[in-house]
Image (cartoon, rainbow, N blue to C red; front, side):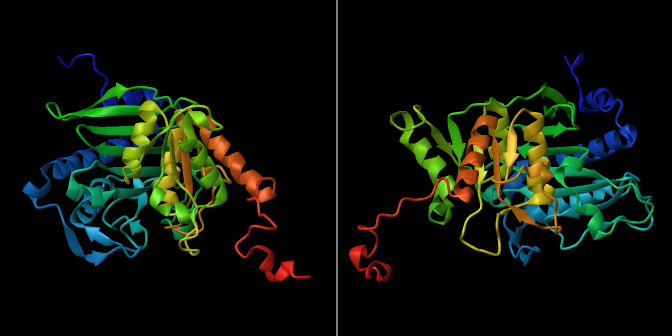
Amino acid sequence: MHLGRTTLSKFLITQLDGIEGARELGALLVDVAAAVKAISAMTAKGALGGFLGKVDATNVHGETQAKLDVIANDTLLRACEWGGLVAGMASEELDDPHPVPAEFARGRFLLVFDPLDGSSNADVNVSVGTIFSVLRHDHAEPPALEHYLQPGRQQVAAGYAIYGPATMLVLTVGKGTHGFTLDREIGNFILTHPNLTIPAETAEFAINTSNARFWEPPVHRYVTECQAGRSGERGRDFNMRWIASLVAEVHRILVRGGVFMYPRDTRDPSKPGRLRLLYEASPIAMLVEQAGGWASTGRERLLQVVPSALHQRVPVILGSQAEVQRIERYHAEFDSGVDQPYVSPLFNERSLFRPEARL
């Protein structure tokens, strides 16, 4: 029986009540959901549909594109450009914003997205996803680049789809974070995870430890404490996870708590972070905060960061509020000089024979 179950469309009618442009915003989110269904069908077919592997092209970041990257990007563009709901779109796979074709009416929203987050995992059958953000465009003229450079706090909606054992759509319009599962029998997203809430405390963290040699001291401090477990300062054991797919990592945190860290490191000074602000960090931060969690660069609330470029990268630390704020405190203590590594005057790298020691 399917009667009495809340579909995405029915849910949006209630959730968007009182929000400016509710009808158009609801219609846009339904268009995004339609694209997600199409991408879900393609990822489910995998090699049977000929969708796996790479194409002979790179995106703006110099990354080799997977076939699914290109197909998912085109699917979202085609699903959302014609309805008179968006003024323009921007994607991880495009150098510049995508204007609405001249034959279509322009709307009052901007849609920015990562069409297939974690696409390198598709070839090994690990969960991948789609991340999106909706911004307002209250201007008569077509959007220019600067119109896209809005801080995350100005988002009117954000969400992601995860293509795993089940396809789920998780979204927020500023009234909590809610999860929907695709019922393939009826072709509808059904509300299955209302009001997702991240516990304030956690005993689980996710970070790529292969980059440990590049971490800043505050991150080393936090991870070392977690690794020390019950015998250390924290007095309890922690588990570590790493999937290398942002959507999968965040989905786990929304369902059962935890902390995800892709912090600033010294590997490439030209890239202070690895994740893109506009269409990865900002929408995920909105979802996490609407679920009672916290999202930070380590030094600043993510939703407060004002983009300076379309594909700007930032450090990302998010999840259970108490843990993220602890990591923020460690960064503040390090930056202020309160927490600095101890340097022995006798047993440093050159001991008594350091030049500054010979007086």
